[in-house]
Image: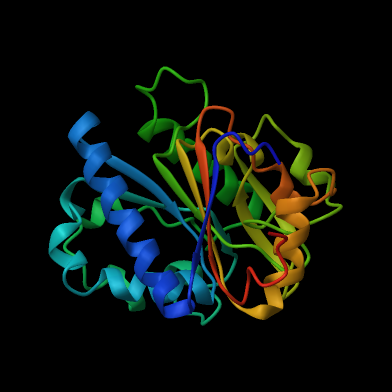
Length: 247
């Protein structure tokens, strides 16, 4: 992995990781809005981001984060109803979206109640509308929050899947993961166009894959391919997840 703009932050435990993640989110939102008047973020599901999301629904973040100028998108979503326990959007609603003072039209869930390919096209159209005034040909998120799987997958980009090579489509329909169902995911082009990527990784169960991703740039794994040429990457780890790293 290109280490020129890669930073590692190691916290004592998962609780401190969530707190540090919320601090980074808040700081990035404020700085971005001061510069350009709005903040566009893409969030992920999973247990580690959930703790951070819950923190952001509480003080001081409830008041400190400029929610009125924040726009929330999703990195990926399972094709299940929003009230299903596996729904990333549904979980986020319970954890923080129902609490924070964000305008409802500034929250952009991935559509799920249609065919996967049609849903992908609909979400791509939504991205094009939102980012139409950007100088870049592709969306430029100010912050993208990512986790990683033990197999090195990121978002819903899984190892060995041919779909992940489709650079001309921002939103892909894929099938895989646990459970093995259809999902929609942003592609590498969008992820690597972000101004900042924040990986959130906790637990000893992720220690081996963290070591591989950070110390073996030749590994043929999706998460290794997250190398934004014009952005920065922060790996926010707890000590358990970082326990096998050298040095």
